[in-house]
Amino acid sequence: MAAASFFRRWTAENDRILQAKSGELFMIATPKKAILQTNPKASYLAYKSEIDAAIQRVLDSGFYILGEEVAAFEQEFADFIGVPYGVSVANGTDALEIALRACNVGAGDVVLTVSHTAVATVAAIELVGAKPICIDIDPVTFTIDIDHLEAEIQYLQQSSELGTLKAIIPVHLYGYPANMPAIMELAQRYGLYVIEDCAQAHGAMLDHRKIGTWGDIAAFSLYPTKNLGAIGDAGIVVTQREDLADRLKSLRQYGWRERYISDIPGMNSRLDVLQAAILRVKLKYLNRDNQSRQTIAQTYTTQLAHLPVQLPQVAENVSHVYHQYVIQVEQRDNLFNFLKQQGVGVAIHYPLPVHLQRAYQGRVSPHTGDLKTTEQLCQKILSLPMHPFLTTEEVQTTIAELSKWFKD
Image (cartoon, rainbow, N blue to C red):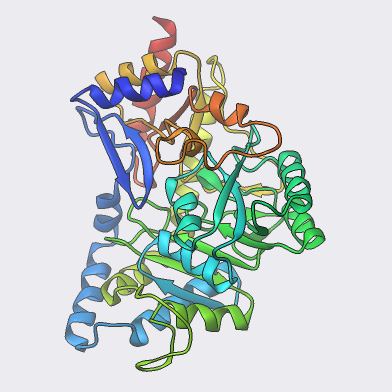
């Protein structure tokens, strides 16, 4: 099929890079000039003096595992989201895995999610021994299709041969919230856990309510390119339920409730204290950084409106935080190559849906309907440069080069 063929061609070319970061599979055109698709270093430089001071504070403290610095970040992030409990972990994949374990999802269970996502979403489900099944997505929001979700739930409720349907993982992709009111209604009707994958939606809102407050539990990646990113791997899980918070704390450190005594089987997934200190600095500026993303997105939307591309559409009750600004365009591959040659950093998130990747083919597809929208979109999507520190000149150059390609 076309997507798989393009993926094979792309991996064969020396001037493109295949990256698998925290399970996140995407293509990046490496720019010749300084317009980067994302720029974690700029985030460090913007807050350098405070970050350097925070790092020195940790080094001077002599306390390097968990402790007050980590606890302070956990509470500050929980307060930002609007929940009472935050439990930090080593990375975003662990955040999903530990969230699943806290909800007692394991062998013999089934979890519904999407195929248009970072591989980490599906990998985490398999890490706990459960079976992932992928649902198609809405062509406008790129998030889980509610009608297809309900059809698959009804099928699985009537068929026990695959296992016990236990949870839904909606992915808030590119900074846009999934339809949480509809998802929660289905979950409550059928008795399912909802574990929000918020890896790309730090600060996003739906109906004036933060993403991460809707489900039973929510997992955030704090990878360097995220809206809130560490300088290394990091993750956090948040919840409104004290019982789940207690399990999360135990699970992330060998199942301990008291040191060296494991009450439940756990793992080792602790947030590094240096990363906690860095994240405390950057969290103070997250709203401002998200506003910068929104301003850049508005510029793109206004000045690209005349071109034959499909731009992101945002509902009135949504606050989109633009982890990515994703357009849909015919002849995407040609445009990708052209922008690369002009030095404009663009990306494809994601070039091949999870269900079409060799590791998952034939194992995660739904039993009702198909994944047609997912497969079609992966051939048209293109992520433009998007981070809070893009200059006006860089944004205008990106727009000009896009316009030039269509004109020529």
